[in-house]
Length: 238
Image 1 (cartoon, rainbow, N blue to C red):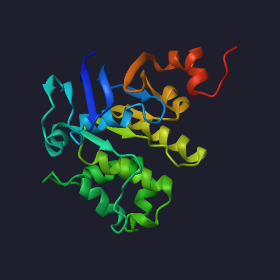
Image 2 (image 1 turned 180 degrees about the vertical axis):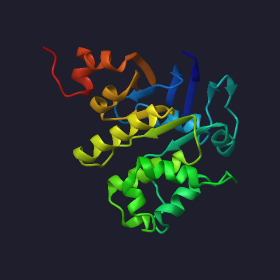
Image 3 (image 1 turned 90 degrees about the vertical axis):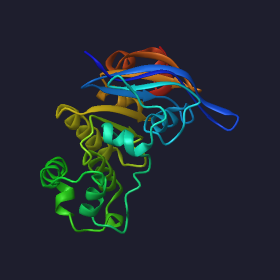
Image 4 (image 1 turned 120 degrees about the horizontal axis):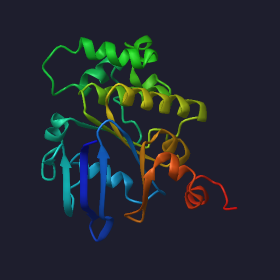
């Protein structure tokens, strides 16, 4: 299986603080890959550097074999990568459909097919098509943020803490949607503090600690790792 994304020796710094310290990892095409770790481990900085929101201090970011580093965010989105940011960040004064159309702002073709596709994925959004995004629940806003990202027709969608602040029953629904998006052919790179849910969803997982990758493996294997259980799953070692 070929890699859609290859990150090599990536470093990210903010002033004198090094948030990401020379990490390397791969995202195989068609898979769900997760980065788990404590808050401040460098996970979000990694995603932001991939999509061009943060300039890396060093390293290489290859998407389908092409170097991304140095490209502006809009160019990276055109190449087929989108980011669902932490905190959802929907446009609260715009309707659901207006938010979705903004997700396709760089396209000049007919959006009807894609609108129908995301409404098929998110029937609740179709019901609230003309409702202001600010009146949606937290779970509905997260659905809208994901659907908006899908409107650019990405090959790779990156999600930053999609379960943050959501009730457990809503979190399960969000992860069901993540699996369905992947089944429909979109590769997913997921940053998530809810390690239990992330590892269940992931084909491949990486553990980040203080800016470094300290462990990798299949999601199912890391979910059974005693160190991971103790550190991230709230289960003490036997």
